[in-house]
Length: 383
Image (cartoon, rainbow, N blue to C red; front, side, top):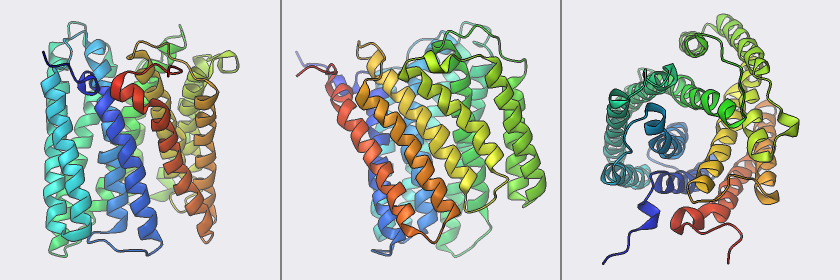
């Protein structure tokens, strides 16, 4: 009798490991490119944005939602063969992307097509789960999560078009459109929709969210995207500040007991508060400051927090943060400060080096603690 492969026994395990590994590899390559150590056959900014979107953050999304979305919808769990197929396409495409970036842009296009196909399979599976749900659609949260993934699919299609056009040296500004939609209406919106559902639940908050809260957030982020793409800076700043204040007031309504909460909870509270901070910071429109505050302060913090909680909880261990992990949570905030400082002092290249190095160290330390849990279910603290 063949022993079951533990690593592939639950969907979050391969996808979390994948996102962590590519977070280190892609940042290392980008940092070396930034210093001119080598050049690639594609734009450095395209490399950076695409790997962040679809090789790092998306695998974390898939791992978390393939575990929790069926529960949200009270549907059957995702079959093992389904998520292994998606994982296989994602890894093949990711490896091909790196090879193509160094060798031939045609391979890059082929890799994006493969990863895009894996994305289509993800959306098909989530739509199937949603349709099979036995609740009143398990509240509007599940619908908004699904809409966020469709926005991601649209974004991915734009990246594919832009990559193909670049071979023929056509520039229709599609990349900027794709990057803006993908960041605000895919990555940030999905992460925030999941967070505003799960963090109050984990925190035993009994205050009901305002009616239409997700609708307001989605509409605000969509307006931000439209104003950003059309270079209407003043209206964008107004909508960002208004949306930031709206979210901040709502978070205060939920009455998180942050100071009395364990680290595994207060880090999630902190992540949510980075959202209005990043939106309001957009009034300082300089060198992607607001974007990086949002990407690291909110998105990275929430992923490390959720990733830790899911990894422990689904290996039969109580979700908790010991001193090691608590220090990792603090370390994420150091990275926010370093990257924000580089946006403000763009001539200080050592700040970029420090932020990039700290980013890689963060994921190395996280996988150093939880890699064995993901691979074979090892209990933390056991020999």
